[in-house]
Image 1 (cartoon, rainbow, N blue to C red):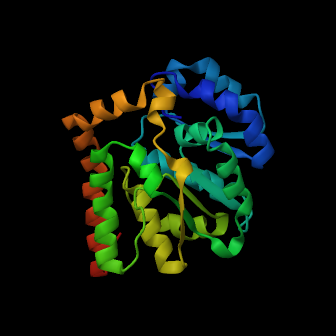
Image 2: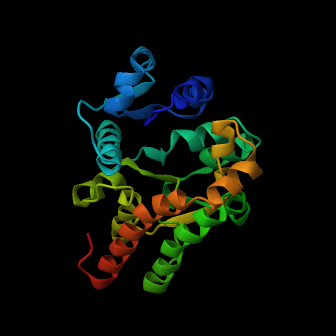
Length: 251
C-alpha cells in the first residue's frame, strides 16, 4: 500500500467484499510514509480481522517492504496454503473491470500441483501497455530464455505458490529493490518446477487507476525518458541476477 497520492485505499475498500468471498485473508504492507499521510485509512485496516497488516515503523526500500510482507504471510499460513503475491492496483483493476470473471476463474482453478505459478501478461495484455514498458521488461524474459531455456516474466505482476514453498526460499533472498521479484523466481526454480499461464487480466491498469484516457496516457508514457529510467532501475539489477544465477554464484 505504497499510496502517496491516496488513490489505492478507496479501491481496496471497494473490492474488499469480493476479496472476502475469494480469499481467506489479505496480507497488506503499509510503508511509513503512507501511515503518516493517511492514518484514518490505515486505522480502518486494523478494524477488520480479514486484513493482516505489516506496518513499517521506519522507511524501507521496495525490496525490504516486499520481503517483510512475504515473511509475514509465510509465517502465518500452513505450508500447503496457496498464497497470491500481487499488487493492489493490478488486483483492483482486475476485479473492477471486464476482466473480473476471468480473474476469479483463474484464482478458483488453481491446484497445488501447479505451484509455483506465474500469471504472465498475455500478448493482448502487453498490447495495452506502453511500448517502452514491454521492450525493456522483455529484455529480462529474453535473457532468461537464452540462459536457462525458460521463458518467464521475471518482472511478474502476480505469482501464486504455497506458503511452504515461499518459506523455503525466503532465507536466501538478498535483493533490496524491485528486482526482488526476479530473485524470487530464480530461487524457486532451483527447488521446484515453475508453471506459467498467460492472462489478459494483467492488462495495463494505470488508465483505470488514474482515471485517464488510455491512448493519451500511453503516448505520454512512451515519450517519457523518466519512464525508461524507471524501468531500467529494476531491469538492470534483474539482468545482473540472471547472469549471476547462470554463472552458478547467483544470489
